Image (tube, rainbow, N blue to C red; front, side, top):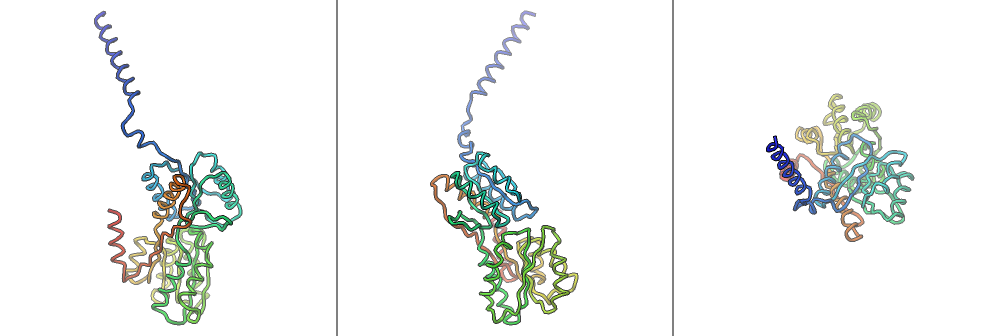
Length: 321
């Protein structure tokens, strides 16, 4: 018994010694892995994959910048954004869904607290502008208009379908429509009207049905959301209006690209939401490091048609590798 007790005591001492050494030992990469900054990203409360892609890009940038990232939801009351200053973030990226006074006031409060703020996807006008990361909706309109002008020289009767699922486009609809008019020339644009869908994934179907019944001369429909493109195109297929109405979609969903291959959709406007999220976090990192970043980073818009679809898919495949 005495011998067994001595051996047990010896084993216990060895175990305590080893555990103590493990607790005291600092991993060689601990300093490297400790986040330098904590950034917060605020996105609208929507199921839209566009904002999910922004989050993916932001998280990738956070890893590259050795920063921690927390993701929060914007609410209409502004409560979430009002708590932003208390979560210990070194910088905040906000994707405003609407240009309202509540959001603007919350952003001004953050500015007064000297907390770096970057606006993502939709800008809000202010006397002292915030750094903005996203696409230029005027350029969006110009690309659409230029494309339409290549295959229809006159008698353009178009409808632009905006969506609450992509609220920044609706908020700047005047810029979109101005770009279209500049590109197609008012003399060839016979009529243009704007419509709006809600957050329902199939909301565009009802709008398309209503347009077909009320506008017999309609020959072009422009969508500004991926889900609306899919739902609205399916409605036109069901109504047997493919070819009679030219469709310009939004997004690079595989089904949309397949519709282009089949000639159902004439073209689609593609932005890179992952790059938008990535650039937003890079801008916050620059602000924290030097106190300065670019006032505006245009992440660009691409027009994908049957002519350049193969090269687009090849580039996308290469970028994913």
